[in-house]
Image (cartoon, rainbow, N blue to C red; front, side, top):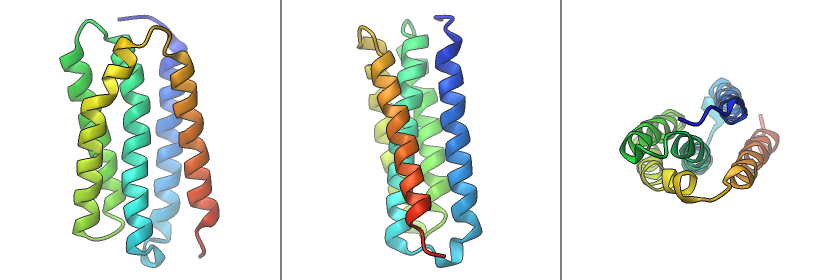
Amino acid sequence: MNGNWLWWIILLCCFGATAVCYLFFYRYRQSVGFHVAMNLAMTSSTLLGTTSGIVIGYQFSESYAFAAIATTFIAAAVGALFGSLGDQQTVLAGLSSGTMTGMMSPMLGAHAGQPLGLLLFSTALLFICFGLFCYSHKT
């Protein structure tokens, strides 16, 4: 395990942003349409799965199986959680998007030479997308 604490702090900030976005939309879940819930489920599981896959894949590059399993559980759980704002089809879309991202994203962290730039890009994209989702929601 590489002992770089900055990576884990960035990942915790991403989990915090995901929690804030979920709590925002949970408060207005009655007015969240199916299309918005589908976009939320797929985008949140993809972005958080990519970010966590880069961090876990880089930090545990000697154990790719652990990185893939942990990232898959994280991304699928986030996809199902955001998908629960919609119907059952939205839950399944979030689960499938999270599963695919969880299986593929640790390769980015494990095989990239200097993945810090990729991590910062993924983190910035996560914050921008969640900010746009929350800003564009009409209450």
